[in-house]
Length: 248
Image (cartoon, rainbow, N blue to C red; front, side, top):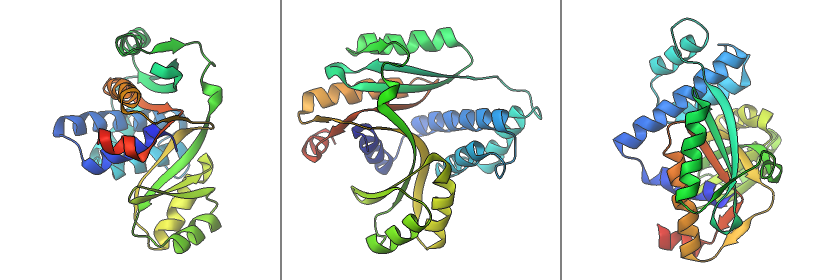
């Protein structure tokens, strides 16, 4: 698990302001629309929509809001057409970043992302320069009260690849196509799943052991994530617990 993902887990535990929550809702709705437009309105027949639908529900997006997004995507309501773009770049210290974007204006998004990199000491990279270091995976965050052996049995039997402790939660890693199956098995076994998503996991991590460099990287990521068009940011770094505590 990348340091960014660990940091994101901590931020999730803290909660969010109403303004931040509204922005998260808007991004999730956009993801639902794109998934529905590309694969159809039926979550059972569209794995991507099923994942985004559940992700939105995990964040407490109202059902009618999700349904309207699906209708917009499939022609039932007037809507906007979004384009998926992945930007690649480097944070201070050479840490590799992948930035996933959904936008209705490619020029605006490119300018915004480039501006954040320039202001925060990073740099954009050519397509392919960073992406090879990452692999798409499904990840589930499970309530930390779950018994490790029982959770492992339920998850592994359903096809999970790995289970690891992360703070006061468990992180379960799956192949992208197994996310829904593993989640269902874990929930049927009686465990509470706090969230689930498709993420990009770095194969090799740069360990950050000093507060200064870690803060610069996290500030850059926070600034990128604050852009309306940016849906997710992934990095190939890990942060020691001591540094995380000092930043927290």
